Amino acid sequence: MIRNRRQISGSFQRHLLVISYLLAVPLSYGQEKISGILYSDNKPVTITVEEGIITAVKKVRKLPSSDSRFYLAPGLIDNQVNGFAGVSFTFGGGELTAEGVKKATEALWETGVTTFLPTLTTNSHDLLRKNFNVLGKAKDDPSLLGSIPGFHLEGPFISPVDGYRGAHPLTYVRKPDWYEFLELNKASGNNILQVTVAPEVEGALDFITRCIENRIIVALGHHNGNAQIIKAAIDRGASIATHLGNGCANMINRHVNPLWPQLADDRLMISIIGDGFHLNPEQIRVFYKVKGPDKTIITSDVTSYASLPPGKFINVEGDTIELTPEGMIRYPSQNVLAGSASPVKKGVANVMKVTGCSLSEVFRMASTNPARFYNLTDRGEIKVGKRADLILFSIVNNELVIKKTFVKGKLVYEYKALESKPVL
Ligand SMILES: [Zn+2]
Image (tube, rainbow, N blue to C red; front, side, top):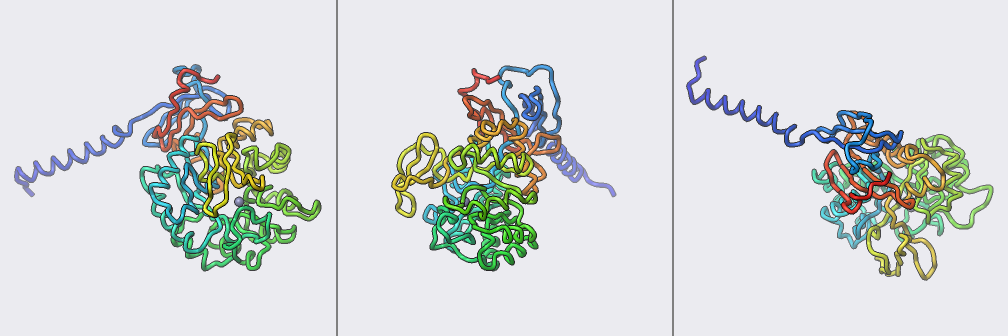
């Protein structure tokens, strides 16, 4: 077939367009080198990133500049974030918005968190459904760079008993209801990855079975299950204890309590709040000795008060809450903890301090383990083929000071004041 000149010219232009498009994608992304001291072996390394993915990890003799004399690790992965920077995923008078989700995500990036599970806690069905709906739509916003892989529902199917219930409002605690869960999951776009339940409440064991059949991870939390019930729950597929040592009454039986069976069963992973307020150093040390760096996940359980200035606030229930300069949230009238205001990096530094574990081990607990546990095969390690979710940081006075955060290869945060003060 003979084509006329106009057709040839049109086809040529289309080819040009395709070629320039193909060229433009890698060019617009470019290739980037990120250097630092690798967290896993303390050796200088240069990482090549292309299109948001790690394409080379090369040991080097010398770091290219003083600016690269920071530790380099995979971004932190936090499986329990109730809110951040004034944004609550559950409360807030039903005013959760996509902008709020973005604001919280960007503020978390500043703390080195590159992946997190927004966590909704015990509340009315309508509010949970509404907020899951907002989150389900917001999570795939390209500007969040895939930082939200799914959600954690903590409650409302937990123990109604004071102490075990923690700060979850009694009015909304209820028995497990698979159909209610299905509705919530549907509202979230089927993005609930984990539900925390009390195994001893009526209907919980069957609820656990249905979750497992539908590939929802079941966590045990805010409960007073005995050894037999905990074993039954684990037999049915429950695989993690939510913030072990918290969500538990102050006064417990020294023989029969939920702590021993959860520590004793090697099939159960644990998450711990390492901020230094929720568990004392001896608890963290013992939990770590029992479960080790492969069965422990460091979490924050952080609330909307995080990254706000210290002071007193009135919460949605009308109670006065005090945020101390150290990052503790308490009810001054009762002198009890009312949640966490510390991003997970605080727990990372504190767990290192009290257990003496290595940087490599602590990042296993704060990045690699949660990535594997939630089947996020594209992150949690510095390896060729993984997402370039990376942080450069120093450790100063037992604090992780974030210098730079990269999400999918994009620099999303840089702390300029550190430029002249590398750590090592
Ligand atoms: Zn809790």
